[in-house]
Amino acid sequence: MDVNTLLKNLSRRGFKSAYFEGAKEACDYICSLIPVKDSVGSGGSVTISSMHLLERLIDEGHTVYAHSTIPESERGRVYQLAGEADWYISSANALTEGGELVNIDGAANRVSALAFGVKNVIYVVGINKICPTLEDALDRASNVAAPLNAKRLNKRTPCAVTGKCSKCNSPDCICNVTAITHHPTKYQSNVYVIVVGENLGY
Image (tube, rainbow, N blue to C red; front, side, top):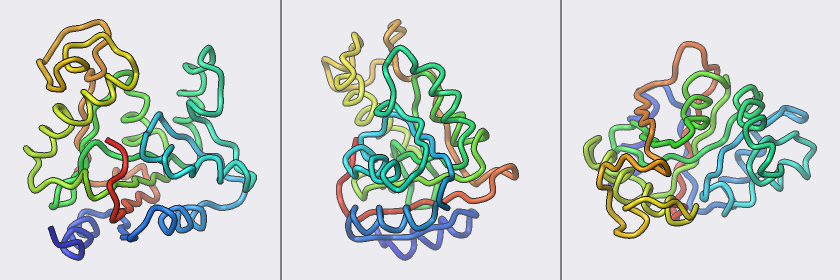
């Protein structure tokens, strides 16, 4: 996979793309993008959590709406507030070499914010999530990211045990909505895709 080609493909699709060797450099760049006092929303991303990005944004004076900043009893309300924030930060379950992003969601709070609710969006994607084709990306989302997330969240799904998708109808299923982002929408002002030369998240 050639990083320069990937960045060009992302740019052709209308994304603002950038590459950093490490998570710290990516974190510094992201913080420089977000104006002081702007609010930030985020879901339960392992990638973003591992970067300690949200804690840094809070320290810099931003209001952050995310799992890690609120009690579980208020999660539904925070989902709404995150979807109305000035910025939304997320990873992706997969990114194709052609520049398309794939995400699978349980509650759909993340995919809805990424697709419509927030005007300024930042994706942070580790090199472990880059796939040659859209078919490969969909497979990665279902058979790598979803089982690992189901296990992490203690979900009672077949994939949490077997490590592979069985297209289940479990009440605990976290694969309720699949979103493929081909381009930013007309509603959005800025959509950044930041690729990091490290293995980050699932």
